[in-house]
Length: 96
Image (cartoon, rainbow, N blue to C red; front, side):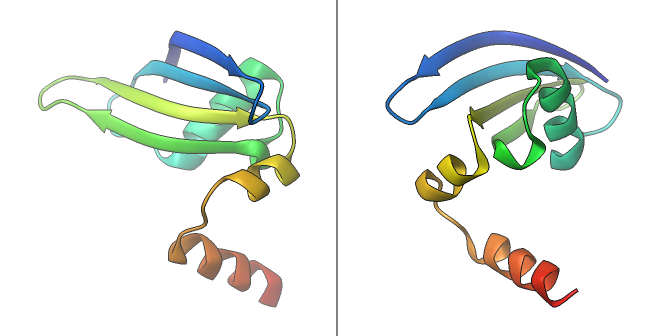
């Protein structure tokens, strides 16, 4: 899996970097794999990254990725809206 950043904007209002990039892979990459790649590339925390979308076109091996990289997990939790799925996963982690 190769990651290529096409656009990077700094958003000081929300303390984040807004990233757009392309990933070249055989199959659609999982969100966790993309988070790990972005954390390596930007030397950030994995829990401070929010993937906004992974989109591909039929017949190609290039996938467009949009993500926000926050300065801390607290900033991410304060700004990003939590979906039902995110809330459920957080509850399951607490139970374990």
